[in-house]
Length: 297
Image 1 (cartoon, helix red, strand yellow):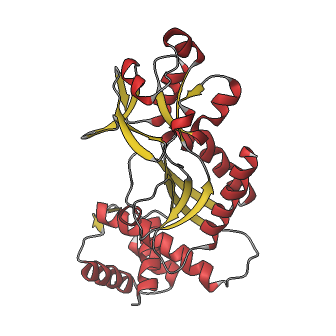
Image 2 (tube, rainbow, N blue to C red):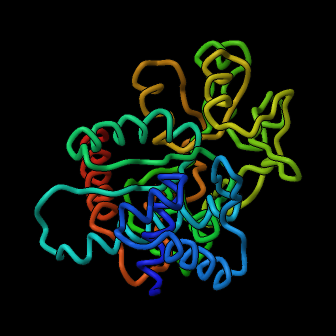
C-alpha cells in the first residue's frame, strides 16, 4: 500500500474507531484493513492504535501520526486540485505566535480570515519562547526579529522597534529616565521562563550598542501579563512597538528613552523550509500583511 493511501486508511480508522466499518466503507475485506494497519505500524516502527473487544483508541504515536498525515493529505488534495489562484481555501493551518501579540492582534485577524474562508480550520498556540516549527508540525509562526534560524523562510509583516514604556502614573511618581543606565533605579517588569530571564535590555548610543541590567519585583513568562502590569502602574517594561500601539494611542502607556532605541524589531511570518507552501498559508500571510499595514497606517 502506498504512503498516501495508508494515511487515508489510517485517517478513516481513527475517525470510525472500527475496522469492520472502515472495510464496509472502502468496499474491501476486513482482513485488508487489518493488514494495512499492521503494515503501516511495522513501517513506522510504532504502535498506532490500541484494540480491545469493544473499541479502538489511538496511542500517543497514533495521534501524532494522524495530525501530521492530515496536514500532508490536505496539501496533497490542494496540489491535485491544481494551482489556480481561485476557489475556496480549505484545510488546516497550524500556527504559533507570542501571547500578547497573538491575543491582541493575530487572533482577531484569524477570525476575520476564517469568516472569508469557512472551509479552513486553524490551530493556534501562544508561546513567548521559541517553538521548533518542524518538530511541532507547524505551518507558520509569527515572530519578532532578529531571526536566528537561517533555514526558515521569513516574510516581513511589520517594521517596529523595542520601546521602554510605563503608565503615565508611574512616570509621574518616579520620573522618566534620561539615560538607560538610570533604569537601575526603576522597578522593571521582566519576561522570564524556567532557566531563562531577560534581565538585560539592549540600547544604542551613537554607533555603540550596550546592555543595561534591569531588575524588579515581578517576572512572568507571558508578555501580555507584563503589559497589563505596566498599564496598572507596577513598573517599566520593554515591549515591541506593535504590542503597545493601541495603548499609546489611548494614553495607557507612555514611552521613554526613544533616542536610545537599539535596532529595528520587525515582525515576520516564518514558515518551515519546505519546497511547497500551501495556498492557504500563502493566502493567510498575504492577508496578515495587508491588514497589519492597514491597522498601522
